[in-house]
Length: 78
Image (cartoon, rainbow, N blue to C red):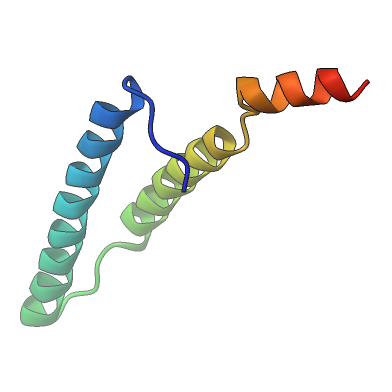
C-alpha cells in the first residue's frame, strides 16, 4: 500500500471517522426499523445509495491518478 501524503492523512482520517459514524447510524436505523416494525423508506434508501455511489466514484478516481514518479518513468522510457 502506498503511504498517504501529508495533505491526504487528515482527510483520510476524517473520512474514516465519518464512515465509522455512518456505519453505527446505519445499524441504528436497522434496529429502529426492526423495533418499530416499519421498513426504511425506499426513496431515502435510494438517495443514500446515490450518495454512496458518488463517494465510491470519487475514491476510485483518486486511486487511479498517476503519481509523479509514474509519469517520470514513462517519459524516460521514450
